[in-house]
Length: 321
Figure 1 (cartoon, rainbow, N blue to C red):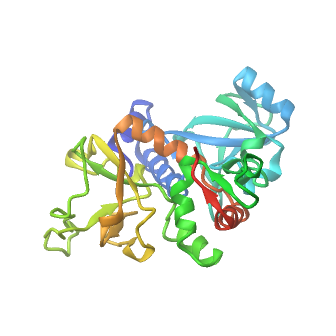
Figure 2 (cartoon, helix red, strand yellow):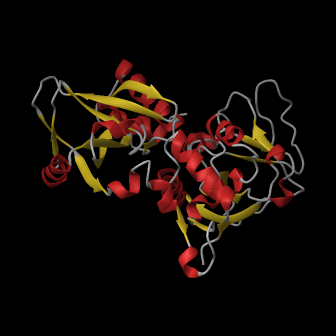
Figure 3 (spheres, one colour):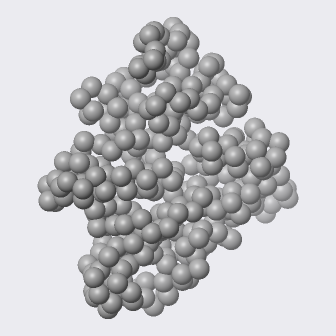
């Protein structure tokens, strides 16, 4: 579901016809794998290279193509790791990109340059390799606290990943957890778009099924949430979206009580009994986008990393002080 704001921004940049359709389709595809694409159609991507090249890219704000294109991934770690030790984060208009390859949790994209050795201006910033290496990143999420008298096997979970840690505790095996993470998109961060800055979960209210086969009646006491925040950002009157987003803590809700539904709209969970769900915050749109983006950047970025996260959480956790 591409926002009308994005289409407007693309048209302002002169993107029309098939190029417009291709750009919006690519934006939607990137978002499906948790890629970051802003409302004005700018994709946040990652490029692996040597430490020397990374410094030069950031300093000069331009890249030199070794082929007739530049290559990027939607995640800083994972399948992209084989292309270099250093990571550069770039922001590129989505209409300049083409899909190059697909992996279970990421896309690789190509930016055509038309010639080898061509210098291309980019908006680039450096990233610490320690923060993105798939062999180290989970240890930055789950820090051993044995040295502060909490004992061996006790870990401190980053606040941004406490929801995912709660999900991990609901599954007896990693295979079950991985399936929930990849197929059901249970990533631990859940949102409910609303018009109410003081939104609360009201057992006297509930969602209406507005699909073409429904009666439009309200399901009293239930709740609809999504883990794909941006997908639903334009849902509402005039496709302008709701002005607020409520962050919903599902930590104490049994896994069987919320599941993906298929009404033809996209990523949405039906919560049959939200009595144990909590509203932890209600944000204006702009702040909600920031919170969601930061949390997505913290997610495990490979099956190996996800399994490490699962095992560390299951060994023992404590909340940050």
